[in-house]
Amino acid sequence: MAIRTFEALLVDEIKDLYDAEHQLTKALPKMAKAATSTDLKSAFASHLQQTEGHIKRLEQVFEGLGKKPARKPCAAMKGLVEEGSQIMEEEMDPDVKDAALIGAAQRVEHYEMAGYGTVRTFAHLLGHHNLETLLQETLNEEAATDEKLTGIAGRINVKAMQH
Ligand code: FE
Ligand code: FE
Image (cartoon, rainbow, N blue to C red):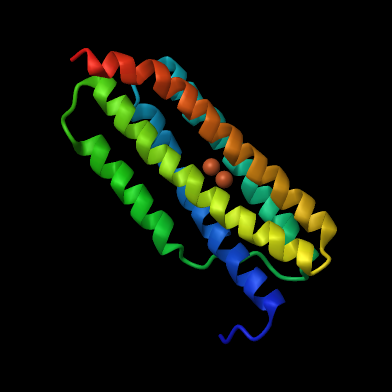
């Protein structure tokens, strides 16, 4: 389907994010299982809960745009999740693997931050101020998760270096 307007582009990008978030609800439990650090496990578990909230917010955004929720396959998230799976399958010392999992997870958060920053700005420019607020809330949670992961990495990387 052709994307003829800026608003149609916003809808298209929301569909991409909607698919990306769904992919993450499948990946995060596996990441939590693969992690050794209890801090890291619980960070993945709590971000899974937030991710379910991100899906709900996107459904509110679809509603605000007068559209039914629909997924557009997000190839980038598929690739990021695939890289995470490769780390899980790799034989590594547990602390080293945790450090690698954090690297994979932070790539995901940065990808999401870029996506939400874009749609937040589109919503602002199109005058959808309530939708802008919803998207900003998710963006803030992605950024907070990224910072939390940086904090955990600070401890894990030191342990990983000792091997
Ligand atoms: Fe998210
Ligand atoms: Fe996220």
